[in-house]
Length: 222
Image (spheres, rainbow, N blue to C red):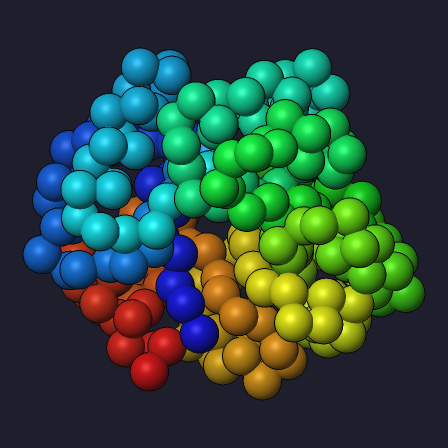
């Protein structure tokens, strides 16, 4: 299962993301992402360049809540040239904006609301949406399983897995322990994101350095 490190805290890209990217280079992460809020586009351009210089796959996750802001985030993702665009709910508009680009799109199933985002909806809703995503041409889905308010997180993961078929299932938000990683893998997730739990040291509470947190997360994936 892939670990996607998000250069984010509290659902925003950290302001010193370029410094952080330089500091974590020795870890050799293969998947690195950021969100569409927290820093300006000029900084995101530099950040994306730095991510790609390491050979990692790049991700931009949309957390903007309005239709207009989300549409602009997709346009930013295209201008940056990211490999994967995560989140958002305006699937047809996003796919249209990404037409001809190489980026894969992974929308949010369920009913994401607010910021930080919570997820409404049950397994049947998630499964049906994921099946529809694949039919439209999405590469997979970005599921906020542990932000669920109406269902068991792992029930949602299993439902998304059924709906996506061979599409890629990424789980984002509140993945903060080896136990959760193991549970996600068993339920059928292909990848997960962690940001805040690495920055605040809560994933491995006895380790102080960010690079140590990241290595602990990678070890939990083995």
